[in-house]
Amino acid sequence: MNAPGITLSPVYGALAAAGGAVSLFATYWDDAWHTDIGRDTALIPPHLALYGSVAVVGLVVLGWGLVALARTRSIRAALRQPGLLLAGLGGAVTLAAAPLDAFWHDAFGRDAVLWSPPHMLVVFASTTMAIGLLAGLRPTRHGIVEAALSAVVLGSALMTVLEYDTDVPQFSQTLYLPVVVVSGLLTVAIIRALVARPYAVARGVAFYLVVRLIVIAVLILLGRSSPDLPVAVLGLAVADLPWRGHAARYGATGAAVAALAWIASALGVASQPAAAVGVVAAPVIVVGVALVLATSWRAHAVGATAAALLVGAGMLMLGPVPEANAHDPGQGQPVMSVRLTVVGDGRGNVRLDAVAPDAGSQLVADSIVARRGGQTLTARLNEIGTGKFTATIRLPEDGRWFVYVEFRRAGETIEAWLPVDSGWQGTTSAERELYVPAGTQPPTATQIASGAAIYAVGLILFAVALIQTRRIVRRRHNPA
Figure 1 (cartoon, rainbow, N blue to C red):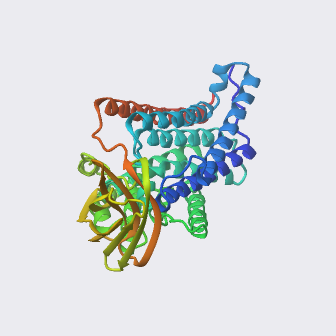
Figure 2: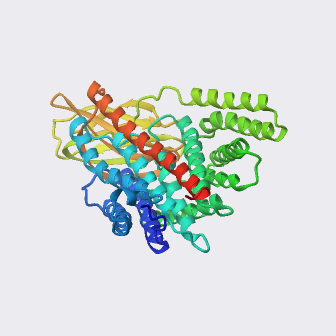
Figure 3: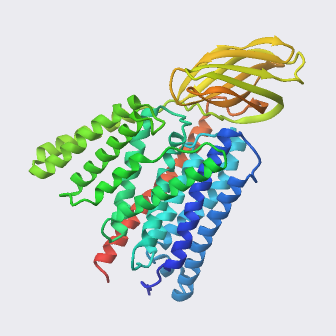
């Protein structure tokens, strides 16, 4: 027999929301750590914060499950509790993703791209877990816990664009807005379905913005790189307005997100170039307005045409994805220390000096390479003395580039890198390790098949979340 009253206590819901917020902060902190410092041990502070916060959320889910099991005396009946199945599945897959990620690195080399299969599995799983917690929460008087958990759902879904938000894009920057729009609209649909309160989306967005502002402030205090202000996310609140039909609601919301993303880029608030955002924003805005007008006029032919345009634009924007150029594609065996000094003139002209006092005559100068968002620039590296090298390169696009110094040693390539802002003026130095790059070979058939299988698991998990959300809403409207 099902026990419909076994919901998640608001106290434990608030604890899970706090843990989720800390995990979001820890993820941005971890990204900044790797950007500013490079690779380090598994026990660096961001990792510990991430492990601890995920453990807290996991314990909340476990406790909820044990209470449900004790009351129902049946695993099957316990898993019928609204949201518990999703939270449990999401939590289990999140835990399983950690050893899977380690196995992936051992088998195929290190991979620092967020969209790699093991990393995206964590995104899908953590989002599913957050959806389950929101679905199973006992309604509160003021809706504060609902808003906090909604923010965790939104934050988990928007982890898909973390590298764009932190100015370390690995793929074409035209992909940023489509991913934000799709992730945002799916989150809006979930929040509106699960939270039966006025302005549920706006409240969730407000909590999310507070979390992001805290992330930015704390990272600045820690002297670390900080992410962009999430201006585009404000557009999601448009979904709470009284639109006529779903097409108008989601068309207008998508258009609002696109317009704000374009404005933020044009004003320099966001890292993405306005041209890269605009090429996607323009058709999204046009289609969104068309959907609103089509719904208002009840012109089904116009609505169908607008929907077709939206699908066509999506197919054009989400065509073949180029190979990622990660700023940290994989550090293999460290070889020796090198002192890197970067001198910038504020106009994109950069000089890189490298001093390796222990090199002797082992190193043969090769080149310096600058990478950003799928672009690769190279320049010749010159030896100016024993263990001393220099090169100059021009960075044509605003934003953070990752500038590598590459050498040949005993027939193999070794490298080190520093992040450089093209508009930065001054001099900075850092001690880095020259290392043998890992994971530089083209992907094998086994790697491609394994990656596809992992992505399939993540997508299936998220599909289950959407299906279960729909079922939960139906049960609420039609209780047995």
